Length: 155
Ligand SMILES: Nc1c(N[C@@H]2O[C@H](COP(=O)(O)O)[C@@H](O)[C@H]2O)[nH]c(=O)[nH]c1=O
Image 1 (cartoon, rainbow, N blue to C red):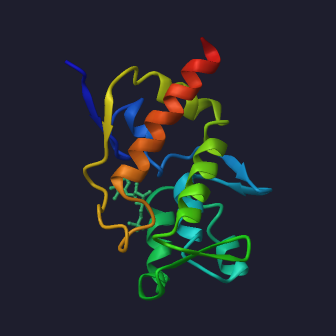
Image 2 (image 1 turned 60 degrees about the vertical axis):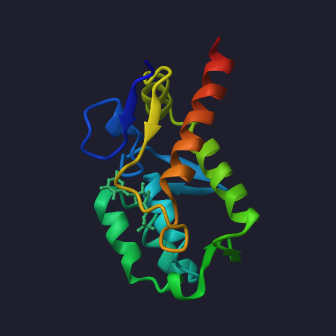
């Protein structure tokens, strides 16, 4: 039977290292992020100066910083000065690019491939996309497709 691994920050390695809270550095469009959580929470702010305060954060500090946003009222997220409707296709493309960038981080890539064929889940996530920047499906589908790609390129 295929094992299931539930991703969250306090899970033992390698699963915990797949949480967006993990301190994996990567760059997207020239912006250096200390963690995926930093980038995701920065999406919640239209002001570039406010976004810039978030990029260096990791873990629950990054996530709590996002609570100051009122994005839920507008259902709008922001990147590089552009507005992304939360339920739009363009936002999915932005998430794809973010995870492709993260896959360039070696520690992340090693942890992800170490999960083998396991089904990845994220039971602590919020499944309603109008209430979160990233649902469990949006996270886990990207992790598993990235794992396939990494495997194909190292085979
Ligand atoms: N609650 C939780 C995680 N939730 C993370 O919160 C992010 C979405 O934030 P929000 O828009 O505020 O819902 C997303 O990265 C999701 O994975 N992650 C973890 O490792 N451990 C946790 O305990």
